Image (cartoon, rainbow, N blue to C red; front, side, top):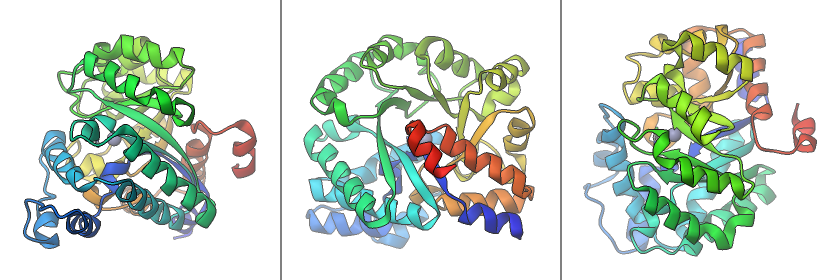
Amino acid sequence: SRALAFALAAPKAELHLHIEGSLEPELAFALAQRNGIALPYADIDALRAAYDFSDLQSFLDLYYACADVLRSEEDFRDLMLAYLARAAADGVVHTEIFFDPQTHLARGIAFATMFEGLAAGAAQAKAQFGISTKLILCFLRHLSEEDAFATLEAALPFIARIDGFGLDSSEKGHPPAKFERVFARCRDLGKPVVAHAGEEGPPAYIVEALDLLKVSRIDHGVRASEDAALMARLAAEGMPLTVCPLSNVRLCVFATMKDHTLPALLAAGLKVTINSDDPAYFGGYLGENIRAVQAAFEFDVDTWYTLLRNSLEASFASDAEKAGWI
Ligand code: ES4
Ligand code: ZN
């Protein structure tokens, strides 16, 4: 349809992408071989067959296990370059990418190894495809406040090249309040902060992310629809939501795409964006998310224009950069 063609071709930003979640089975096995290590799966098909998730935790267990193949600076560079090549092919002109240092520091990988590899991939992609990248350090919320502070300490030598901070991993039982002091320190460093909230957790976690962490965007936020007062607040504040449709269906937040709250969020006037989250694990990149949303909801060109313009506006790019896109 005309609307789908428009959505696939238009310039857009991706604002919710975990770089470790872009590790395709093919690359996972190639890196395992290059590093002389074994994955707990016989082959690519066996690994892909394990992508049958019942909830967020069942996914995270596999996601952290596969990240073990990432060892050298080149591994992180290759991972970044592969994602950015795919994103550029989907019309993405700018991306703000999450990385999880604690996953790697805990395995004895130096912060510099991981970070310089990711930065090298981003620089190469900028030169090859013209795509721009910002890097958002995510704290793992199932770990302690103390561990988050130690991670922030390890990141300080690289702080000029870190564009923001986020909060991810197991949401239930790990409310934003647990990281109020860490996020205050991040904001004192002059960085914007974001947090996953209202993915599996209740709307109250979205309120905490706003009031205690003082986030600039909510990642997911799809359970906001359960709280009318919160919906009104998010709309009034123009607070961006980075929604990940295929992720939500694959992790059983919604039974099918038609059950997704995306249309309700849009109807309430929220600043919604569409993103791919962990595209290697959830059935596709941004283009596939757009196709799946369109198959379920048949949005018109105006709605797609709004969604994609939102992604550019909600980015942390400068006003001059935004003016070049919008
Ligand atoms: C994640 Cl979908 C999702 N939710 C929370 N944390 C994550 N880390 C990677 N993907
Ligand atoms: Zn996410």
